Length: 207
Image (cartoon, rainbow, N blue to C red):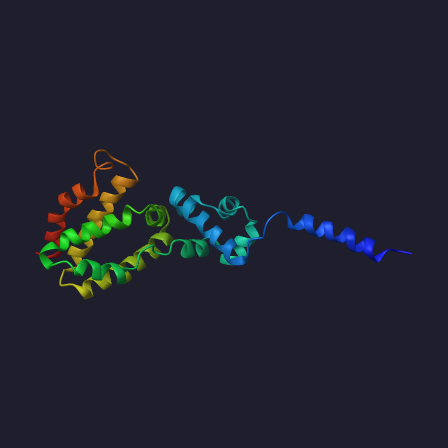
């Protein structure tokens, strides 16, 4: 006669062995781990250079899980590259400065965002991906045109061309500082850069 207790006792260690030490991560934790790995790879390799398999490998999950959560690499990119700052929050901060100091406000706000490593990584990823992939460029262009430039034009009396010129100057400055790391720009203090570029930004934004 078989022993029910013996069967139960044998099954329990097997179940424990399958579970492994510690608590299994839940779906939310797994999803966020994939997104974190995707952000790092997009920042390092751009859109085309980061494969779904590489993202899964970095997150230590099966590639099927990446497909399950996001469908394809474009889905991962859209989720992972959510813009790290909210223009609706930044613009009031800039507009709180007097009109004659608007160039300084833009420079100071830009630098505060870019000097934060956690927020800088997804922005670098978006820029690199936009340079190598038209779909990524279209995604970034759509966001920048509507959420950033469009909102800024409505909130200020600056001309759209001036707003875009100011943003272009600051993005170029940040690429030289954080991507190419050109000296002495890379090691200059934030206050030195603000003092340097604020007059030019002021001319763009409040002629």
